[in-house]
Length: 384
Ligand SMILES: [Zn+2]
Ligand SMILES: [Zn+2]
Ligand SMILES: [Zn+2]
Image 1 (cartoon, rainbow, N blue to C red):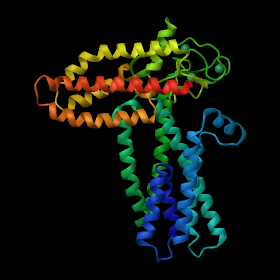
Image 2: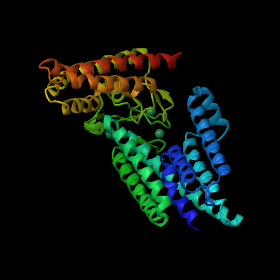
Image 3: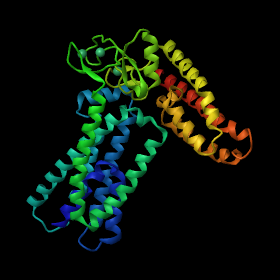
Image 4: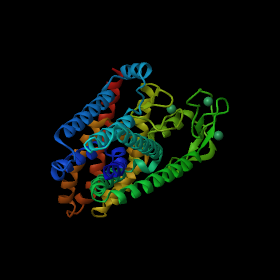
């Protein structure tokens, strides 16, 4: 039964880039295997429609007003892991479409679906756990890291899907190794993160050492100061409102010190900013950090090409680049377009003395001001 091996080999890629994998599978069959008892036109259509509909629902849910999403979450069992369910569902759709074309019995099909469903559920869970932990680490905030991961995943998906068809046995063996590797990575990430946590004295929930309160029960916790790379220091917080600003600048909840989603804390179910005054103080704090970093940006401008990359890393790692975490997708897209245009401009002025040096600093200033305007607009939209 080579088809079941092909499907099992595809599982990791459905857990990762689901839509891309579905597209690759359909294209593969249409191109190479159409008349071969492989995927017929009807199955391809069902697979495409199924994936498109679930992707549509998935996308629609992210666009809902917060209250409507809360209502759906409360009445139906559609938690945030819907995306995970979508991935498992897509893998099952693919298995059904591929296997139902073979002359196997109904029992074989059901058995295959159980195996594929179980494996892809396991994979998706492990992957989203590792993702969630990774996002709370400061490394995830670096500008290149996101695109590097995206690119690696894109290439490995294309290569992996081809391998699943050409050498099913090899790809199943690789899948087992990937499963073990993913479990090890998730465990290592969790150990790194939990080194900075302790149990709540009143409810036992896991609380970050930099937290001022337990996100579950609200019991006050003596917060530790934020040190290098967002790790807690031994010292306890003296100035609470400043501690809140430091956490906000790291795109972390000022109350529980865990990662924010946009300007909202999923653990505390609270908005990041206590009030307008705190937002104003935050803007002033970040602008001050930017001013402090300016000599570094100017100095890095002396270095051709690499200087800009280093300046961008310094910008994002320091609190100077804190606005970026609060920008919505439109704002992020705008910054990306601006960055593209500026890089072209920068390449042109780089050889010119003095102007070339100022260009890196000018670029960062422009994108800083731009992101700040975007964040202000986003947060005003949220209030309305
Ligand atoms: Zn508690
Ligand atoms: Zn403590
Ligand atoms: Zn929180």
